[in-house]
Image 1 (cartoon, rainbow, N blue to C red):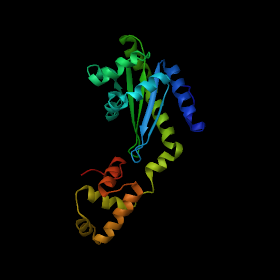
Image 2: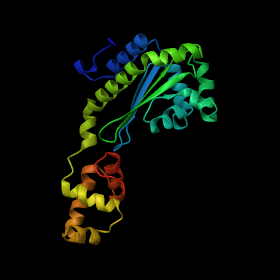
Image 3: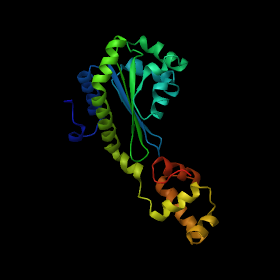
Length: 233
């Protein structure tokens, strides 16, 4: 798949959109969009080659809050064909409107999961018969997944996002303390388990919260689990 190599060019919205346009041309797709949410800051990074009119219409009506191609597809590990949403009222409400802007309700979502709890989602559409769509999907699926990972990796490395997600590395003791906090243990109990004082436990919890950008221990535990640093009990 000969499209722009994002690893060889500066990270920019223009280059991401060029990548999306070239991917659509190469894989015979109509439109595509990519989005990721920084799990720590909540900042959304998104790029799409839809018309400005559709983007405005979509955001003005808050479709991003209900669109199942975003919210349901991102929970999957494997690519999700939008045929799964045909009877979903929210899907119908979004894509009945999309048809007025030349956008088909026939598409595919490719979720991406990164090493820091980061997630991305590449959505693509193609207006054609069901038979043509099924054939096209089989033909391009491998390249589409490769493109999705490539795009996500480039976006995550741009603007210091990976550094923001990784923060300062948690020490082994900080992870250990957060892991016991995740198990519902109180500071005194954690201290007894690890043979350290409850004051030392608090120091490690405070440090862990700061590194994870969390206001509370509960929030720090949640973020550490989401980033794969500790495991839910």
